[in-house]
Amino acid sequence: MPWIPRGLREGIVTSRYPRRLDNYGPGFRASVTITRGTTTGDELNLAAAACPTGAITVVDADPSLDRGACILCGRCVQMLPRVFRFSPAIETSSILRTRLVVPEPENDASLAAVRGELARRVRALRRSVHLRHVDAGSDGSDEWEIAALTNPVYDVQRLGIYFTASPRHADILLVTGLGSAGMAEPLRRTFDAMPNPKVVIAAGVDAIGGGLIGQGYASNGGVGSLVPVDVFIPGAPASPFTLLHGILLAINLLPARIAQTGPLTGTAP
Image (tube, rainbow, N blue to C red; front, top):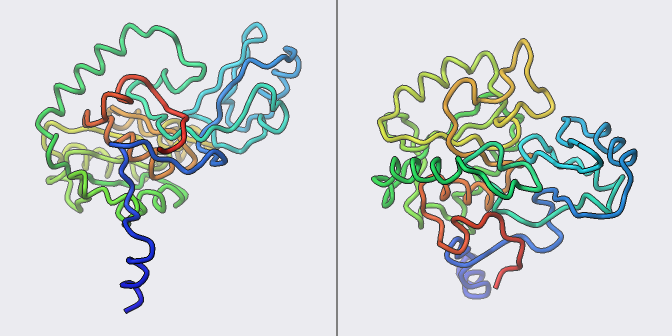
């Protein structure tokens, strides 16, 4: 039984997140962020034009980037490393779609109200949460990351989070994919079959805004027009830690150090 000496050699591999900060190291490309590097408006406009999903906006030589549309292709980082760079930050999920844009707005009057309403709604779900995943037109990459949540490293069951096959037993609807036309009605039926209170999470840029495909005859450009989304998890695909952050954000179980402060970029202790 080779797993016995391996276990003795490696010890406990399960992450302690969220009780302690954990991540994939400084070189991990979890998201793209913006720095205030010296550049020209023309250079920024060229970088914005090169973005395949139109995630970059430039107003008066002031760039912003929508993580809800960024597929992490790295074109902007390659063209303008003084301004755009990859970040290892994993805590990038948000309860407001507008908060996925970086730099984040300094003040958002609606954030406190939305946060309070969501916390009130999920108060009864704090000890045992069942999650139903629906693929609404994904390319398959998001599903690999979601499946990893059940392995010994992340072990979501240690947090009282369980996957269920039946929407009638589910508290959270985790949706991946761009909201294809063929999955529109099954997704709505799944949502309607879930008991209240319930929470909807859009996982990945495809679910948030349609990704590379966007909106068309066979796509709804995300799942927001099909079901009411409570939490947005950016990424292409979102990493397991980012997914875990979004799920815990949805059920109001993040520690005080990160619940209200946004993404962290430090290294694990």
